[in-house]
Amino acid sequence: MATLALVASSCSKGPETNATPSLHEAFDGLFLIGGTLSDSMLENPSDPGYNVVAKHFNSLSPENCMKWGRMNPTPTETHYELVDSFVRYGSQNQQALVGHTLFWHSQTPDWVYQDAAGKELSREALLARMRERAELMAKRWGDEILYWDVVNESILGDGSWRKSKYQQIIGDDFTEQAFRIASETLPPHAKLLYNDYSMTDPGRRDAVVAMVKDFKSKGIRIDGIGMQGHWLMDFPDTADIAASIAAFAATGVKVHITELDIDLLGRAAFFGANVDAEKLVATPENNPYPDGNLPASEEERFAQRYQEIFEMLVQQADHIERVTFWGVSDKTNWLNNFPVRGRTNFSLLFDRNFQPKPAFYRVLETAKKR
Ligand code: XIL
Image 1 (cartoon, rainbow, N blue to C red):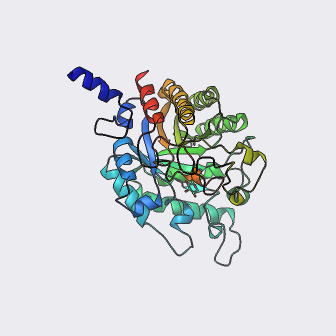
Image 2 (cartoon, rainbow, N blue to C red):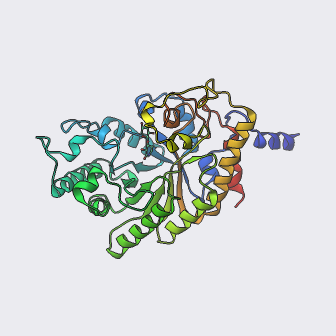
Image 3 (cartoon, rainbow, N blue to C red):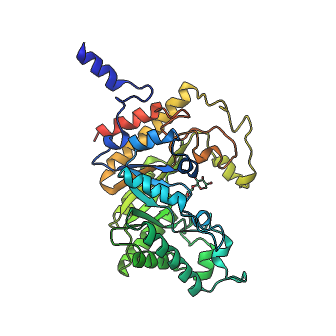
């Protein structure tokens, strides 16, 4: 009887109980498992998402509060509070913390590129302003934060540099200068990462490899490559993801999957049509399960997709330092509002009631298959 009960409980695939294994413990020795703290979680310490975060993640990223525009919406305002809470929470729980992100073209206000009179900064002045931000980060949170997304998304799919404001003012060495600044200001224990999406695009993949080699030949520190991992149900192929992981690892850096979620509802068609994402609205066609009830066949398809991805990641575990989910549960994952506002999307391992989904149990199984 006792044996039977044990078998039944370890196979139990229902709601979270004390007997539900911890995800990060299951992947111990393979890679860290992370999630994010959103601003609303940081503002509400009794958010039910903390039950998931405390048990299942041993790494944490701030979803928004550390971005330049959130910290400094204007040149005279600095918001430390939410980042302080993030760092305090993660340190108390011994979670490996991620600084996301030092320099990104998005969620960065125009004042960053301008002087007090609104005139565009010179290259030197912008570099000095970037250094100030890195120094502030290092001084306040340098001891506690381990990983830093130094630059986010500066390379396009064809391998060229993104024509961001940074690139226009500083030039093609924007990313290089950012890494120089980071390595000169952040403490020696900091791990410096380049982070980007669609890392299976051959042009972007090759350019990232070339960049890492270039930095290494110049003695510029770079410790890891972050593949965001905002993936779809049928794209990219796991073989292509594995090829990128292997290509990055071959340069001697670790790979981090930094923002994993799977967009069940899909979006390729919207982007294919090149529609302005902000103007898209939910319709019965693009939002088929508004009440949050997913048909069992779709739940199964979703679980299979997560399973194939994690089987590949486990195979590549020697190259991978961390796998971070972009969020905690389907309730607040950003894909409910991107690229269409107000959809009921399904993207993570925990459902809208913070309960483990079939995909959670399928992912757990992959940790044992090594
Ligand atoms: C997203 C957040 O999840 C949203 O809440 C916010 O409105 C926009 O940014 N790539 C990144 C992340 O590096 O910072 C983005 O996060 C998702 C895409």
